[in-house]
Image (cartoon, rainbow, N blue to C red):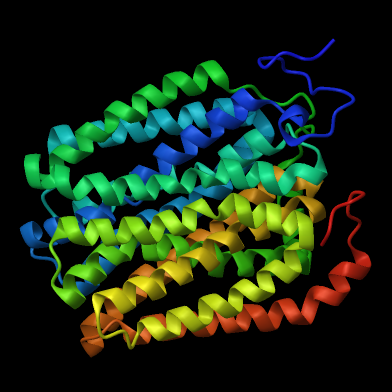
Length: 412
């Protein structure tokens, strides 16, 4: 008899994607990830208003939007450990409650200093760390041949950054930027309820390991390569998502609302293609996919530094985000092929590297602006990092294809 939509068991005898896993959990993972990412980058769209009210320097603005990224990066390791020890569902519920409580307190008490924005940034880091929970929550239900699509669909929750860019500037204009923190708690609470109802831990979770065993992957060079590649793809994506509102207002004098719309267009492009990146990697291989995308991203980011108009910058940012977003999905098609037994902790470690890449990009853009009066140096350096990633991938790809053992029909 066919398995029902709500069943915890995988459907037998059918190999289609939707029949191979647990759709309610996939939906829960997407919703959790989506709203978590919305608040993770919330300081970016609010940055022009916050900077004006608190008289922040360009470097302080850059650090303000970068701290949530760094905190999220470090906390992803913690969440990766929790996922493997207490399960992704409970880990996600705890993280969501911390974020809601922290944001509600910030709204109630107010944020009136640069140090206060940094403290808030650390709290928002718990939302960014959702990555290490949502992806294993969904992907453990799916077989290897569908890992790219499952992780891509769950990971498409990074589209929440679009919601922040679209609505935060307008709400700040109407009610004040501090009130936006309180308003965000409403959808976060609704998603928490849906998550508790829909999400279920997969029955094939690996047994808990000792603390030392969690870091065993770091003894292998492949783990560091995957972390480095994701530092470029996801780091570029989230770093731009947090920094573009500042870029568009400072570089071209756009209003915060218009800058939010421009940012939303760029972020939407990168979010939309993440599952496509996973599916493309499933079809042609993660290595081929990443190789092309690193090159496209490098060219687009290098070109942004010399963009003379809003239109030119917007086109180049969309191209860069399309490449980076697709690359995000491609990296996580490779991770479970190599580290299936350590997927929880590897998701945390690779995600941590991505967050560190985002912290570097966001903070370096602010520093470049203050030191040189332009964002160009920051973009050029990150473009160079994409070229280095391409060179590294070229160096290791033949060895990976010889030594990795992929499931039948899965391309590396």
